[in-house]
Length: 366
Image (cartoon, rainbow, N blue to C red; front, side, top):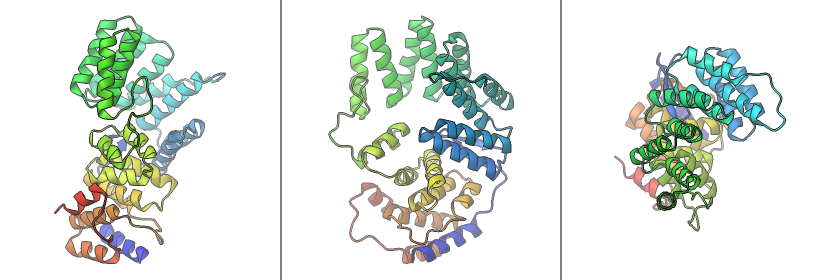
């Protein structure tokens, strides 16, 4: 019955979502709205992102380079290429005449407002010990996206290495005040305090990390005896997506289910990015498929919604209770009550009340 039910959903959504002229994509967890990108280039980008996440950096660089051949004016691809070339040159015994700076410069020339290019350039320059250049690039990145933590953390580190300790500390303090639930900011503060022998500040940052369930600077494992799915949901809720991935692994939550849970609570950008990474490796993952569709709908990205719901064979798919509910919500929003009814009647309802709090919450939504 699963395949027939998917056919109903696919047909309904295909007629309900014509592609829009504007394209919105998720890059690095943030939304980038702009020009159309070819399917070949986007597929290469996703393949590269998946390989990079698996630690296969050379293969990822090849994939991104292939994508750049299809789309030579992509600042996203050029930035990825520059970052990986920089990492390659940092490797022991690496010999390469490639220059990461050229890729970053081209990315910034194509889109001067693309913050990620300046952030990765700052990171690369820090690795090379070019501290003044790293400071300048990080300041530009901060000016382009003041709400993102990573550029501010890189700027603070550059200032510290330049010997401007008080200025470095002020940037970290401001970041912690603005984002008190940011594990990255607190870990950076704890590390800074340890390097500068500020025991009181270090102890305070460690306490905050433990309260958030994040890893201590001295103790990498969580202080909790067992990671639960509630810990995963908590990390998603506070926007700590790297923590969510780490906790999901410990809690045995699949990558597709992680994307689905993010979509359920409205973390659309992360859900879309996570789902697309999963689908690049396993197009038949039903949780990731539904997560990609729901996230695309929340982001008003009709092209991504059409891509999520076409060209897939899920003849033996297991439709999880959460995926069943979220797809029903999507069909109501996009098509109507009759489409939802056809979907619900074509899928198996779980027996009894779910033990999953998130499933219960979604079931109770009207």
